[in-house]
Image (cartoon, rainbow, N blue to C red; front, top):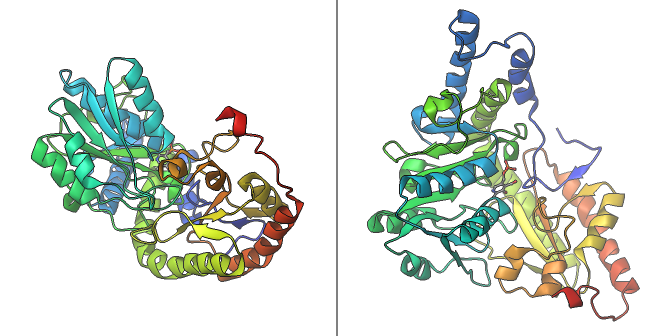
Length: 394
Ligand code: PLP
């Protein structure tokens, strides 16, 4: 079923909550309000449902349920992994990450730099890929953790996590991956990957915002980031967000079931959208390599137009897309991901991300392809050659 009040091409920013997820949550917003830590049955029953959800999210990534720590979001999961690696190895003061991570990682690392730590932000190639040899060389004896996202939220470019995890293991360094964009789109198996930590966020897979998880491998030492009660086996204080945890569990089940569809139907919709734009509109080019890439994401640069203008006109015809990540929209800064790929400021400013999902219908792609060429030519026609108003700030 498609949802025609809007034409939604921003599934990497967030997703529509699945009706099945809402259904699963409702009893926990209504009658089952007990505290899972309570000694009486009314509380213990709720604890059983948390356990059930834990098993479902664990199955999504082939983890043991005991390796799952529920958090408030992907951001908290990322912060917690880095925090733990540094807290459990106080003699190690160095972190390796990439220049294209989500701000949830970049900002945390920038604070680390101001508090006596060293951070290496690895560059990427023009297609968005990582130089694995360079990554290997950047690991030092005092490197506490390497953190590399599994798929980029802006371009969809996929990094070789299994290979990176093997390098880290051989050097005795902990490894974290921000896999927030991956579940339901590509297979995720923590055993195959060999990671120590992995972050997920429920609102990217048709569950509500404000619930996430951190996978912590058995035997990997862990120090909590949010401290308080003994919840989550002492790994994350705070009374559990029961309805959202239950919703996350249901969404994880649906994500496992919809994986084949995402890689066939959604992938072909994305390909139709991408080839449609590239063939119908002159002066367009894809940002990031074609493969390996998330099956739902397409990031396109539109020559001599500003993304801001495109998004405004798309919005007038009820089309939702984005420039950069939703978390940085509204700032004048061009995408740090595209800049790291060497796109140049003008191209970065003229780039739009389209991200599809389970609820997109082909008619929506047709609608987009009908409106977009006109929007681009209108913007190009209005544009007289003038120095960029942003030039000074650079
Ligand atoms: N990491 C990536 C790659 C993301 O795309 C997002 C999206 O918001 C996050 C982390 C942050 O997740 P959350 O919004 O749950 O904090």
